[in-house]
Each structure stands twice: as structure tokens, then as C-alpha cells.
Length: 281
Image 1 (cartoon, one colour):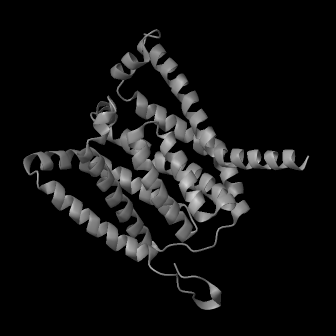
Image 2 (spheres, helix red, strand yellow):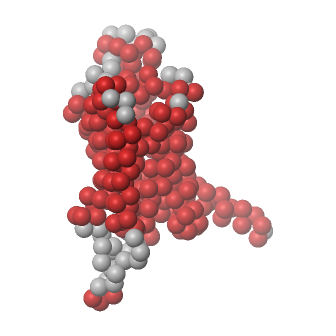
Image 3 (cartoon, helix red, strand yellow):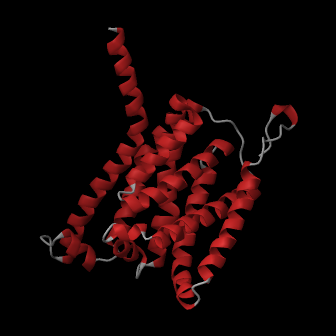
């Protein structure tokens, strides 16, 4: 009986950690199916292959993203609020300066990772990834793209993977174990090996933000900043790198310096304790 109870408790803990990821994936599947069916009816070609339909309606993936991120936020907001009460994070709110440093660090690291992955040729191993990535950004409505990737994606994904998954895994495995589990699930959720590598590293950074600040706000802002920098800088950087190949090294070096300085500001030593035993942030 004791052995059976032990296995049951382990399974309950595993499900507790996996539940948030399962919910966002289910929301994605539901909205994707509904979105493709609706697009088929709107275009008058309900029997069209999904790939052909996506090629015909370029903005459909973004509308699907807006839909499932919104559904995730609406359906899981109460569970997230319960998790905030459940884990009672310490009040170590970062002030504006540290929030800005978190945004700069996330944007710099994100672009360095993308540049490194592209330079290594790793993305070329997986056929179709480059074309899919380009299709997701090129020719899209800027407002819709910003809403989906800079606002809704950081809100929904950070609520799920740091606000819920990280905190739950941390309660069982400690900060390091929680960071690894949440980052791994964040990577798997992105659905391919190239994005897994990127999302895993960024997930570790966002978990560190959450751990150090006691809030998911720095992770949300950093996530949004990384996505915004990717959207805004990619066309400019591509033209710059084609015209001046050495510019890759210059930009990467500048981003590395910014990242190191910001990381030092955010994670140096222990936080000072102010009056009344409160930690300064």
C-alpha cells in the first residue's frame, strides 16, 4: 500500500508540473483546427489542403496565435492566481532600472543565440525551418505581428512556463531543477529542434529573472523585448551583414558587452536588506 501511495504521489507531482504545458498545447490545437475550418469557409474553399490554405491566407498563423494565446490567458488566469497564492513569492520587485536591464539582456542574448545558430548551420540541418521562419514574419501586418509576438505570446507563455510550471517544479526540485524542467518544456512546446535550443536557453534566463525578482514581470518584459528586437532588427541586420560581412562580429560584440553588463547589474551578489528586513530590489 505504501509503495502504491508513493507511486501515486509521484504521478500527481508529474501531472502538477505538466498540466500547464498540456493546457497551452490543447488551446493551440483547438484554435488551430477551428481557425483552419473557419478560413476554409471564409475563402470558399473548405476542402483546401491546410498548407495551401496557409499559403493563400498569409496572416492565418498570426490570427491562430492571437486566438490560442487569448484562450490560454482567459482559461488559465484563475489557476495562475491560485498558484501565486500557493507559492507566495517574496516581494522583491525590481525597479525600473532593473526591468530595463532585463529587457536589454534578453534582447541581446536572444539575438546572439539566433546569430550563432544561423552561423553554425544548425538550422540548415532541419529542412524547411528557414522558410517557415521567414514566412512567419515577412509580409505580415505589423500591428497583428506585434500583438501576437510582442504582447500576447510573452503574457501567455510566461504565465504558463514561469508563473506556473517553474514555480511548481521548483517546489519539488528546487530552483535549478525547476529552471531546467520549465526550460525543457518551453523548448519542446516550440515544436522543432532549432527553436528548442533557442527557447531552452531563453527559458533558463527567464526562470532566473523570476527567481531573482520574485515576479514573472521581468520575464514577460524581457520576453517581449527579445521578440520585438527580433522583429525589428532582422531586416536591417540582414541587409547590413550582406553589405558588410564583418558587421556580424561588431554587432555580436556590442550585444555581448550589453548582455554582460546587464547580467552583472541583475545578478551580482546578494540583495541588500533595507529597513524592516525588506530586501531592496
